[in-house]
Length: 74
Image 1 (tube, rainbow, N blue to C red):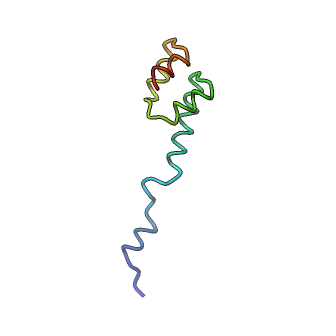
Image 2 (image 1 turned 135 degrees about the vertical axis):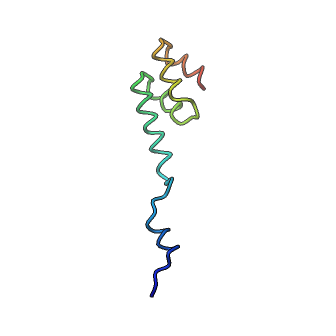
Image 3 (image 1 turned 30 degrees about the vertical axis):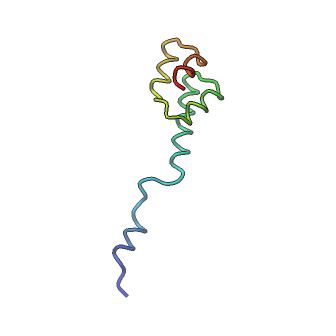
């Protein structure tokens, strides 16, 4: 029996995006935000949003309070 090349491609190629990727990205964002100084509840809200992560970190680095930064960002 000759292998079907189309079927082989389906089974040997890694998916470009798997179902765990969004959770991994959010977890990484949460870690970065907490390292920057956001308390857990705010970090969770920001991590799960479309907020620009660099901007979120930059606000705290420039002296903005986490609560104020979250109000600006969200």
